[in-house]
Image 1 (cartoon, rainbow, N blue to C red):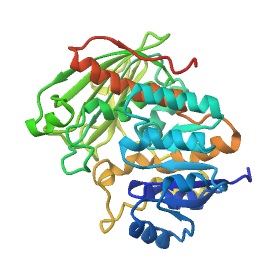
Image 2: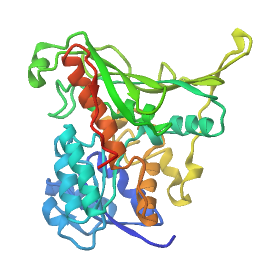
Image 3: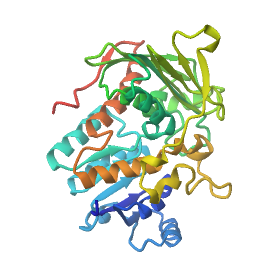
Image 4: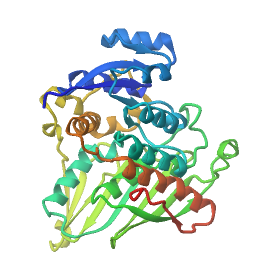
Length: 374
């Protein structure tokens, strides 16, 4: 493949992490960057040698040379910026979540249908080395029949930017919904969620969301499987943990309880003491072009002198960033849907939105919109 995709990165906080990846990808041209803060825009542009710089997103979208935008702006801007880009004729990659309402998720799915452009939500966990390890086990048949899936995302968000305080836990749930839906590429059909505990009053009043923890069960359409996911953001004592676990008839995989410990494989029909086995999850850089393989182990924000909150908490997202960029670029070169595509991204995002709605109404079952048959 010799085709190159001209890409622009929008939002240069966490977004700067992807600049050197696109610069080295054999099918990408790191064409432009965009940020409202001109001083920061120029500093990053100078650091990475990028000449084309925009402080106005609408002006960037008028640039006919740009094929695709990778959006890393604050959560409240995701839907509006994604829709503007699609209708401006640009493909879209967007950091999570897709939107903050199911209505906006539906608008983005419809925009892709109307424009023929591609959309990918850049969900890190489904490209983290642990997920790729379990996916390989599943595809080889080592798990046997998958019986149950579970995931969690627990994090202390105190001190994060202005739109985070008091956020309902399930409004940022794709890191745990994505892997349980993504392993077998299942469609969430309905969800029931309970809230537990109470955060401080000053946080409650921001979003009228009282719960310290929200835990949800997801039922998948056309499948005998369900999944359990839980989230916490404030006033819960827990080391950062994005976990994904899968239980099969032959083997099961469990995420470590403590960062830095090894994952555990349970194998059926062994003597009880031999069922669990600690495993070192390998890196999956070999799946990538040689030019970007090194980015599974390091990045812009890995040094002590240059940190970002998403790296200080989260361990660099499991080496997922070059895999995400590669999937997006390759999908555009091959003219296919990326994974996750618009409908899958809408489904995963809406699980969290509707799970919170369920929790606020005592755990009632809430059905998801059908994003796949529009």
